[in-house]
Image (cartoon, rainbow, N blue to C red; front, top):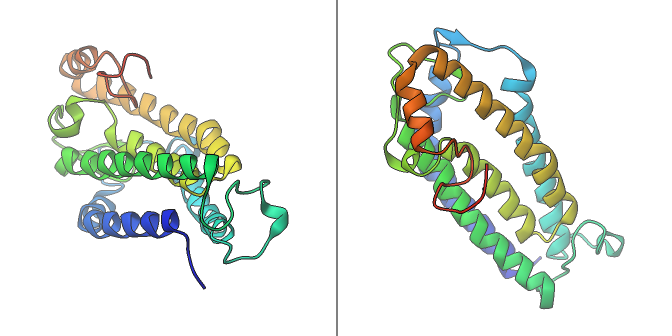
Length: 216
């Protein structure tokens, strides 16, 4: 059993990211549900998370097919464009995905760290919640959500799976964007002008850093 290089690099990056993120995520899970303002709506809270987890599980067989560990000739190019060691367009797509994944991990984990004590895995307002504008929050309003989308998009590109790229862009990203807009609503209601000033300073860039000419 042998894996191609992009798959090995992806596994290594995700493994390092998981080790770094583990303590931060553990604290966030402990804080979950303790907020003074908490939304139970499934579309807001669980749908983005479940869609992301579904993508992660789908990436596993995609990478196995891509590395030709799972022998499935019918899967190429239906599930993955590449097969074995990537060449040509598949190689370009794969390594571009690795770069996007690196960016995504930085934004996701860095975003969680930037939120500090305000980070919880659910959309909620915690007691003594304050406007946060340091760390990666200087560049984009929801760096962690941006990072989750980038990470899943990057891994999908790295696996050369067009269906997973489309699912990430068409389903996962809109769900996280919807949650981001809900969070802004309750943050404005609870933090007032301080948060509005921050959002206007950020040009309301929710997922795409403001130094990039266009984006949401």
